[in-house]
Image 1 (spheres, helix red, strand yellow):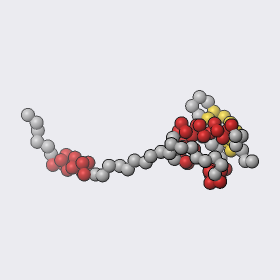
Image 2: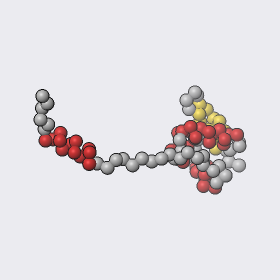
Image 3: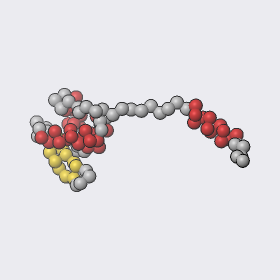
Image 4: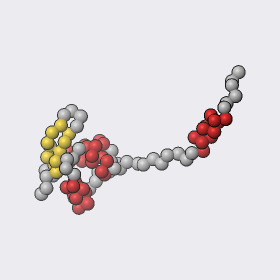
Length: 95
């Protein structure tokens, strides 16, 4: 036999059920345009470039941010400074 529910519990459950679902943001799946002036200015304004910093700034996935940093390093726009297994730190090289 189940116990009758308290009025407070019922109200709480009703509020949860009637609340609208949280809005989901979709992360970008495309790499920012490296040649864009806006992207160039954003990178120039950052003291250090880290995958998590780029992911937050450009609203992209972390794996894409790592690829973006490798591409910047390949183009000699970023220089590897320090890091270990989990975190790589780069600095922007102005041209």
